[in-house]
Length: 567
Image 1 (cartoon, rainbow, N blue to C red):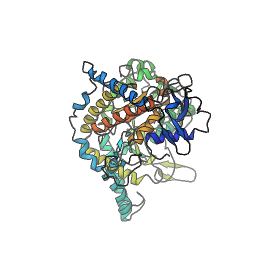
Image 2 (image 1 turned 180 degrees about the horizontal axis):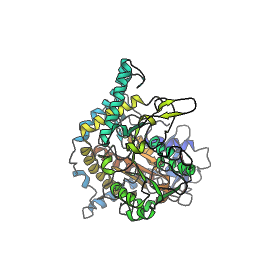
Image 3 (image 1 turned 180 degrees about the vertical axis):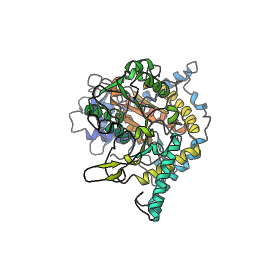
Image 4 (image 1 turned 90 degrees about the horizontal axis):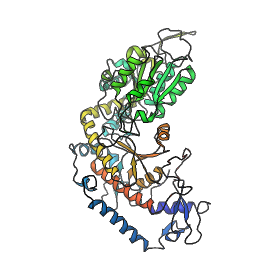
């Protein structure tokens, strides 16, 4: 954990921390200086331009005349772009751009007090968010793909549950237990309606989408490839095939590796360049070539959390139903789609769907597995304990039907209540409205980033329907470095491999930065982000390039698996 500080103070601290390291050299005024920024070595071309005091952790300029020249060059560079002809070259097009539904985000901001957070000039959180002095900076939260912020109705529902209804569910005849059970099961009904399930029995509450996927993978491989005692139970065995894509989140890769290791099944994957082609499309032909009569399960994401690609699920399902094993099942990771667009499980015709509550304005620690009721009842229990049984004897037990079969022990009651409140909140706004707003704002973000010199945006280009997120790399600046400096300015983005190491390796990068939007973000949020990003890139550009053979700061063709920011 680090305390926020100005960029100058941050760099001074980095230099001071490095004084005792062999990575910093203060030789002659013409000897390049190396110093650590975010755990990487950086080289400044003119050491005399910086003087470092280990006692004060200050940086002062000893070559002041260079700075006006750099500012002038930067100004002239910007002017050159503005003077170019053509709409694509006009870098100020965004100033006149207006969103069609520009009232959406302002109408909900009051429901998210955390978005009113302000910082002082050094990036420290101010206790009074009403401080509007010129030196304060408001939080720009662009990390909703990792977790969304929570509106007041959700936090109120959680507090009210604990203050007025707290009790264990299904286990008591007293009033509190009945009330808690009613609230908990009411949330199940809300989730079922939200995804258009045929029955409330198709909704299994889990700790999150990761547990939902693990539930399916673990139960299918529970017998370690041997036929189960109950002939109705589904299982994987040697000779079976599981098909995923290279672009999946780790939570949709690792569980299947473990399941195939236990069962003897074979894990196959669609390469990244086929899951998202250069034009941003899913290569259905390449996918079809991987399907065989031995394909027993296909598990893939609805929307990529790195590329923003939206998969053509109905076309994929059609291929699986016609080319794979007749009993093949399809699991959909809907973590990046459920919060942002209408999702209808009956229309999609998949067999399982994993959802995450905290990405859709709900609390952490809650998610759900939707499954066709007959399919769920064909799986063995995931965990043993209370609630999931019919009868228990000393030599055997019988099990309840879904969903109770998969909800052993005390469930996440308060979290489920909060998820129900989150669904109420989203449906009050309207998922179609949220989707339309985010599509336009996301396209605006993509276009703005394309205008930033030195930025490479990953995933489909402008004009291709994609989620409202952009992962990107920037020349020789490591994503964790400039995201740290953006944070100093109050702009929150994510940096790392986003739990998608195979995808990043396929793209030739070890890490990327990602800005992700939600319906509470505004055009002004995007503009401020781009402004600070450009300032930060200029700041790092003035420091020179990474040394050690010209290795790119974005980790291109490098091995940054052990990278940890210095903060």
